[in-house]
Length: 176
Picture 1: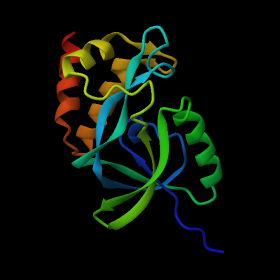
Picture 2 (picture 1 turned 90 degrees about the vertical axis):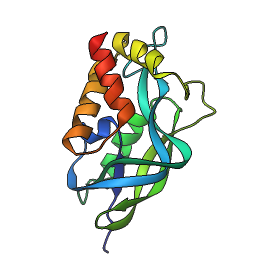
Picture 3 (picture 1 turned 180 degrees about the vertical axis):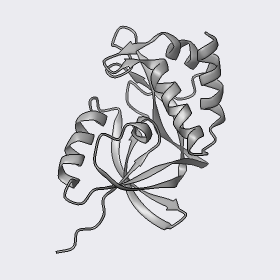
Picture 4 (picture 1 turned 120 degrees about the vertical axis):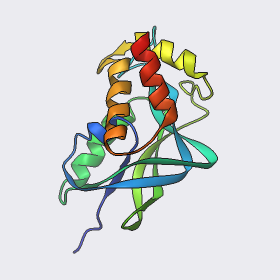
């Protein structure tokens, strides 16, 4: 029986740290979503007492988020799904969805983690300056929040993916 390729959409730390075996990767676009520091991080990049911010896909009409679609290596699908759920669903702020993506090679469908705008950790619409101040100071189980920002901004730049907000935040946090 031929198994369909499992694709995973990375728009934040998955771009530079997928933590699963990758058979292929493609630049991909998710229409109707934007990458945003709209989730308070109480585990990986902050704590309950001093939350950081992590990226999420936030629904926005007319928006588009460019990222990386990863094809999971054949035979690793079940382990990958379990590992992603453990990593991404540590709280219930992310929702697991299958999103249509556009790539240079054509349309695909990929697993993605999007923000639940009704969740207590959702904080969409924070001014960039406030985001920068939070990111500059917060530290969680996976390290300083600023390292997450810097790594994501650098990898997006290396891939030729422009993100004005992340570029501004990286410069501002470095200055702080």
